Image (cartoon, rainbow, N blue to C red; front, top):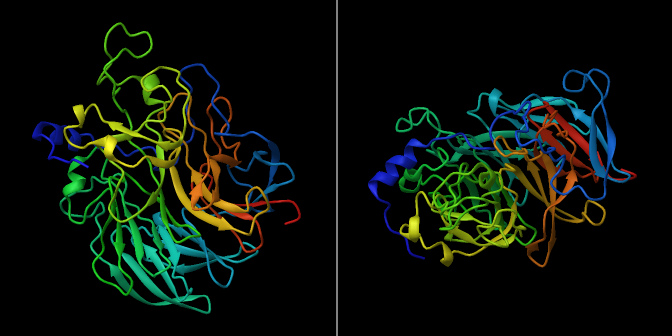
Length: 453
């Protein structure tokens, strides 16, 4: 792989383009500008609408009117708990569901009946949650650090900071300009701790030279020590999880407003469209990676973008979201001067552009076929695609160390007008054989249950 330092004019331009990105914050109603109907799910084949069951006392907005979700036939959806701004989740060894609430600085513990208690409070935007392989340590990723807690009898104690000094909006050099400061965490089978450090903005090149490096996945070795970059060029790898074979995977929010990267006309253009920001192209590009990480893996941001088009540069091309190649960014990497994108490994799986995947987890042997083994991803939905990308819970089947193509497990959060009543963040399989889904927009945790569960 060839990397050279980018020209000063390009670095200045990129640093100035600090956008929050497509995965952050609630998104109430999205207008469809093209006149086309908005999709209700990414791949909804075989799903059926079912009413969302709401228990007494939980019927405030958006459940002050009937809601329907799309799920496989025979499955049910119910509101398990109301948790405003609920984000990531993990099950404890004792069978409680921990849910992070960054806005309140808290981590909640939910019982099997949905009763809530505050497990931790007074934290700095806690987000990612993970247990050590033996279950004796709980790791909490705050915006500025990763803390480890001794876990015993349903209580977290003896807090210690294991990854200090992570950048957030309070970092003096950033002066509050940080679009992706929430961190996620996972633990490898050897006890190594991995933490996502998002980019400050859409195409902020300076992140690659920061200390610690932003737009990366850091790894703290087993037993402790400095956290160092494990994978780079990861714009916002909020989805971070350990697979059944011990490999580390990330689901990434890609960049916005990508310029057309080919020296040819796009659609009906009369001359070359190279370097032009075209709304129709932006709506479907770039694909958002779901990548298997290894030491030194480079995902290319902001110099390279995953292009899923079967016919690259052709308007209306079919798209293949498996093993997606990366192409040079026309704005920051013209002619491949900053990075040789063709030398980078293709992205194993991906989401359609602007899906905004957030939480990522793996499940094995808990759900019925065809969902018995695979990855679950909370898809937040787009803010700038037309028609808007629908929020959903996605499933990627797992076999022989690989993930298969995306399927929708839960959809229906968006109607054909583009209006939304919910935005999933994370989905985790529970010990009772159901899937539990957090939704920071609706302020809820759902129980999505297969037949008989």
